[in-house]
Length: 163
Image (tube, rainbow, N blue to C red):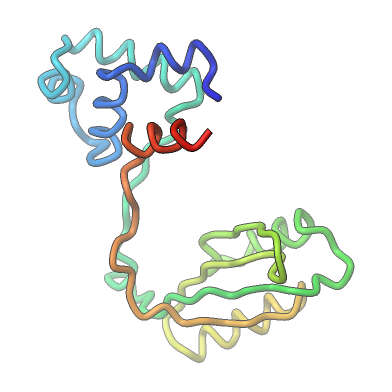
């Protein structure tokens, strides 16, 4: 359930701004204003309020890992954490540079790690490192048909319809 403040920020114009920023966070306030029918100062204020409300939490560059020589993308599932908490394990694996994402889950896998390496031998060394924290099971990612979807008003409306 959205708070009243967030609901006000996410009117039709707010959603259009949010979607445009997710598609290209480098758009200028002028370009954003042209897309949604607002002046630059109005766009600036709307975005500032979305940041303050915690709707927008950051702006990021998407990196082509292969161009950096990181050609092996894998997922490591950790089970049986040796009696350690997920938080304890997550804190430790976050210090391994090749671990680029850590997801806590329910079910048989306590933690799922996304890792990138330069080779299969490099991946084997990372698996050896994370095995200190649990029993690893590894899957190599062949491709990612899409990397990230825009969180849209349509998705939000589907969520509301489910409740």
